[in-house]
Amino acid sequence: MIKNFFILLAVLIAGLLFAVAMIFFAIPALQESTLILPVVSTTRADTIPIGTEKEKLEQEIAKFQSDLDKYTPEGAYIVINTSSNHFYLYNKNELFRDGVCSTGKNERLIDSTKREYTFYTPIGVRTVQSKQKNPVWAKPDWAFIEEGLPVPPKGDASRFEAGTLGAYKLVLGDGYMIHGTLYKRFMGQNVTHGCIRLLDDDLEAVYKSLNIGSKVYIF
View (tube, rainbow, N blue to C red):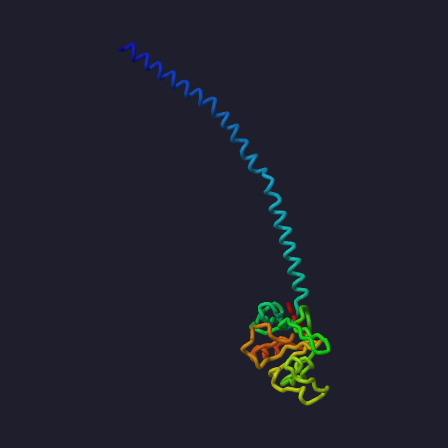
Protein backbone atom coordinates (compact mmCIF):
# COMPACT_ATOMS: atom_id res chain seq x y z
CA MET A 1 0.00 0.00 0.00
CA ILE A 2 2.91 2.34 0.84
CA LYS A 3 4.40 1.44 -2.50
CA ASN A 4 1.20 2.51 -4.29
CA PHE A 5 1.23 5.80 -2.37
CA PHE A 6 4.75 6.64 -3.57
CA ILE A 7 3.84 5.73 -7.13
CA LEU A 8 0.83 8.09 -7.01
CA LEU A 9 2.97 10.84 -5.46
CA ALA A 10 5.56 10.44 -8.20
CA VAL A 11 2.87 10.74 -10.88
CA LEU A 12 1.50 13.92 -9.30
CA ILE A 13 4.97 15.48 -9.05
CA ALA A 14 5.73 14.59 -12.67
CA GLY A 15 2.48 16.17 -13.78
CA LEU A 16 3.18 19.31 -11.79
CA LEU A 17 6.67 19.61 -13.28
CA PHE A 18 5.23 19.19 -16.79
CA ALA A 19 2.68 21.94 -16.18
CA VAL A 20 5.38 24.28 -14.87
CA ALA A 21 7.55 23.58 -17.90
CA MET A 22 4.65 24.30 -20.27
CA ILE A 23 3.98 27.63 -18.57
CA PHE A 24 7.67 28.50 -18.58
CA PHE A 25 7.99 27.97 -22.33
CA ALA A 26 4.52 29.31 -23.27
CA ILE A 27 4.79 32.74 -21.57
CA PRO A 28 7.67 34.07 -23.77
CA ALA A 29 5.83 32.96 -26.88
CA LEU A 30 2.63 34.65 -25.66
CA GLN A 31 4.52 37.85 -24.82
CA GLU A 32 6.12 37.88 -28.22
CA SER A 33 2.79 37.50 -29.98
CA THR A 34 1.11 40.24 -27.96
CA LEU A 35 3.93 42.64 -28.70
CA ILE A 36 2.98 42.47 -32.38
CA LEU A 37 -0.65 43.46 -31.83
CA PRO A 38 -0.11 47.14 -30.94
CA VAL A 39 2.07 47.58 -34.02
CA VAL A 40 -0.66 46.22 -36.27
CA SER A 41 -3.46 48.25 -34.66
CA THR A 42 -1.61 51.57 -34.82
CA THR A 43 -0.64 51.33 -38.45
CA ARG A 44 -4.13 50.92 -39.98
CA ALA A 45 -4.37 52.61 -43.36
CA ASP A 46 -7.79 54.14 -42.65
CA THR A 47 -6.70 56.40 -39.79
CA ILE A 48 -4.84 59.04 -41.80
CA PRO A 49 -7.34 59.61 -44.69
CA ILE A 50 -10.23 60.24 -42.29
CA GLY A 51 -8.63 63.38 -40.94
CA THR A 52 -7.62 64.50 -44.42
CA GLU A 53 -11.11 64.03 -45.85
CA LYS A 54 -12.66 65.86 -42.91
CA GLU A 55 -10.39 68.85 -43.49
CA LYS A 56 -11.27 68.87 -47.20
CA LEU A 57 -14.99 68.78 -46.44
CA GLU A 58 -14.67 71.59 -43.92
CA GLN A 59 -12.79 73.71 -46.47
CA GLU A 60 -15.44 73.05 -49.15
CA ILE A 61 -18.27 73.91 -46.75
CA ALA A 62 -16.51 77.14 -45.79
CA LYS A 63 -16.11 78.04 -49.49
CA PHE A 64 -19.78 77.33 -50.23
CA GLN A 65 -20.83 79.43 -47.25
CA SER A 66 -18.60 82.26 -48.43
CA ASP A 67 -20.11 82.09 -51.93
CA LEU A 68 -23.62 82.02 -50.46
CA ASP A 69 -22.93 85.07 -48.33
CA LYS A 70 -21.47 86.85 -51.36
CA TYR A 71 -24.56 86.29 -53.51
CA THR A 72 -27.16 86.81 -50.79
CA PRO A 73 -28.69 90.30 -51.03
CA GLU A 74 -28.12 92.64 -48.12
CA GLY A 75 -31.73 93.79 -47.89
CA ALA A 76 -35.12 92.14 -48.31
CA TYR A 77 -35.83 89.72 -51.15
CA ILE A 78 -38.45 87.12 -51.98
CA VAL A 79 -38.24 83.51 -53.15
CA ILE A 80 -41.12 81.97 -55.12
CA ASN A 81 -41.55 78.20 -55.40
CA THR A 82 -43.79 77.58 -58.42
CA SER A 83 -44.11 73.85 -57.66
CA SER A 84 -45.45 74.14 -54.12
CA ASN A 85 -46.88 77.64 -54.71
CA HIS A 86 -45.19 78.99 -51.61
CA PHE A 87 -43.30 82.23 -51.08
CA TYR A 88 -40.49 83.06 -48.63
CA LEU A 89 -39.68 86.64 -47.67
CA TYR A 90 -36.14 87.17 -46.38
CA ASN A 91 -34.02 89.94 -44.96
CA LYS A 92 -30.45 88.81 -45.67
CA ASN A 93 -30.44 85.28 -44.17
CA GLU A 94 -33.45 85.78 -41.92
CA LEU A 95 -36.80 84.37 -43.02
CA PHE A 96 -39.45 86.65 -41.55
CA ARG A 97 -42.57 85.74 -43.54
CA ASP A 98 -43.82 82.93 -45.76
CA GLY A 99 -47.14 81.75 -47.11
CA VAL A 100 -49.08 80.46 -50.08
CA CYS A 101 -49.18 82.07 -53.50
CA SER A 102 -50.54 81.27 -56.94
CA THR A 103 -48.42 81.04 -60.09
CA GLY A 104 -48.76 80.30 -63.80
CA LYS A 105 -51.08 77.56 -64.99
CA ASN A 106 -48.67 76.51 -67.77
CA GLU A 107 -51.25 76.52 -70.55
CA ARG A 108 -51.37 77.91 -74.08
CA LEU A 109 -54.00 79.99 -75.82
CA ILE A 110 -54.10 80.33 -79.63
CA ASP A 111 -56.33 82.99 -81.16
CA SER A 112 -58.02 83.03 -84.54
CA THR A 113 -54.94 84.55 -86.15
CA LYS A 114 -52.80 81.67 -84.83
CA ARG A 115 -51.10 83.97 -82.34
CA GLU A 116 -50.02 81.98 -79.31
CA TYR A 117 -50.06 83.06 -75.66
CA THR A 118 -48.24 80.98 -73.06
CA PHE A 119 -49.27 81.39 -69.43
CA TYR A 120 -46.35 80.44 -67.24
CA THR A 121 -44.36 82.09 -64.45
CA PRO A 122 -40.78 82.63 -65.69
CA ILE A 123 -38.05 80.82 -63.77
CA GLY A 124 -34.97 82.80 -62.79
CA VAL A 125 -33.96 86.01 -61.05
CA ARG A 126 -35.88 89.24 -61.54
CA THR A 127 -35.94 92.61 -59.82
CA VAL A 128 -38.74 94.87 -58.70
CA GLN A 129 -38.92 97.54 -61.41
CA SER A 130 -41.76 99.61 -59.98
CA LYS A 131 -44.39 99.60 -57.23
CA GLN A 132 -47.91 100.99 -57.13
CA LYS A 133 -50.79 101.26 -54.68
CA ASN A 134 -54.40 100.69 -55.81
CA PRO A 135 -53.34 99.64 -59.32
CA VAL A 136 -55.65 99.55 -62.31
CA TRP A 137 -55.33 96.53 -64.59
CA ALA A 138 -54.89 97.28 -68.26
CA LYS A 139 -56.37 94.12 -69.77
CA PRO A 140 -54.27 92.63 -72.59
CA ASP A 141 -55.75 91.09 -75.73
CA TRP A 142 -55.69 87.55 -74.37
CA ALA A 143 -58.02 88.50 -71.50
CA PHE A 144 -60.80 89.21 -74.03
CA ILE A 145 -59.95 86.24 -76.26
CA GLU A 146 -60.07 83.90 -73.27
CA GLU A 147 -63.55 85.18 -72.39
CA GLY A 148 -64.72 84.89 -75.99
CA LEU A 149 -65.16 88.64 -76.33
CA PRO A 150 -64.13 90.91 -79.20
CA VAL A 151 -60.81 92.62 -78.60
CA PRO A 152 -61.33 96.38 -78.17
CA PRO A 153 -58.91 98.95 -79.58
CA LYS A 154 -55.93 100.11 -77.55
CA GLY A 155 -56.87 102.65 -74.90
CA ASP A 156 -60.54 101.68 -74.90
CA ALA A 157 -62.20 102.17 -71.50
CA SER A 158 -63.26 98.51 -71.39
CA ARG A 159 -59.61 97.53 -71.03
CA PHE A 160 -59.19 99.07 -67.58
CA GLU A 161 -60.34 97.41 -64.38
CA ALA A 162 -59.85 98.68 -60.83
CA GLY A 163 -59.59 96.27 -57.88
CA THR A 164 -58.68 93.17 -59.89
CA LEU A 165 -55.01 93.30 -58.85
CA GLY A 166 -55.69 94.01 -55.18
CA ALA A 167 -54.30 96.91 -53.18
CA TYR A 168 -50.73 96.72 -54.48
CA LYS A 169 -48.67 95.60 -57.43
CA LEU A 170 -44.93 95.13 -57.90
CA VAL A 171 -43.83 95.10 -61.55
CA LEU A 172 -41.20 92.52 -62.55
CA GLY A 173 -41.02 93.34 -66.28
CA ASP A 174 -42.30 91.67 -69.46
CA GLY A 175 -45.87 91.93 -68.18
CA TYR A 176 -45.22 89.92 -65.00
CA MET A 177 -46.21 91.26 -61.60
CA ILE A 178 -46.71 90.37 -57.96
CA HIS A 179 -50.24 91.43 -57.03
CA GLY A 180 -53.39 90.50 -55.16
CA THR A 181 -56.46 88.64 -56.35
CA LEU A 182 -60.23 88.51 -56.15
CA TYR A 183 -60.15 84.71 -56.41
CA LYS A 184 -58.75 83.80 -53.01
CA ARG A 185 -60.26 80.31 -53.10
CA PHE A 186 -57.70 79.41 -55.77
CA MET A 187 -54.67 80.40 -53.69
CA GLY A 188 -51.95 77.77 -53.60
CA GLN A 189 -52.77 76.58 -57.12
CA ASN A 190 -51.27 77.05 -60.59
CA VAL A 191 -54.04 79.21 -62.01
CA THR A 192 -52.53 82.54 -63.10
CA HIS A 193 -51.50 83.81 -66.49
CA GLY A 194 -47.93 84.14 -65.26
CA CYS A 195 -48.15 86.69 -62.46
CA ILE A 196 -47.64 85.85 -58.80
CA ARG A 197 -50.74 86.32 -56.68
CA LEU A 198 -50.66 86.83 -52.92
CA LEU A 199 -53.25 87.14 -50.18
CA ASP A 200 -53.99 90.66 -48.95
CA ASP A 201 -51.90 90.63 -45.75
CA ASP A 202 -48.98 88.88 -47.45
CA LEU A 203 -49.10 91.31 -50.36
CA GLU A 204 -48.98 94.29 -48.03
CA ALA A 205 -45.96 92.85 -46.19
CA VAL A 206 -44.14 92.16 -49.45
CA TYR A 207 -44.96 95.61 -50.82
CA LYS A 208 -43.62 97.32 -47.70
CA SER A 209 -40.51 95.10 -47.49
CA LEU A 210 -39.30 95.10 -51.09
CA ASN A 211 -37.87 98.18 -52.76
CA ILE A 212 -37.26 99.00 -56.37
CA GLY A 213 -34.30 96.84 -57.34
CA SER A 214 -35.05 94.13 -54.75
CA LYS A 215 -34.42 90.59 -55.97
CA VAL A 216 -37.18 88.13 -56.81
CA TYR A 217 -35.97 84.52 -57.09
CA ILE A 218 -38.37 82.21 -58.93
CA PHE A 219 -37.89 78.47 -59.28
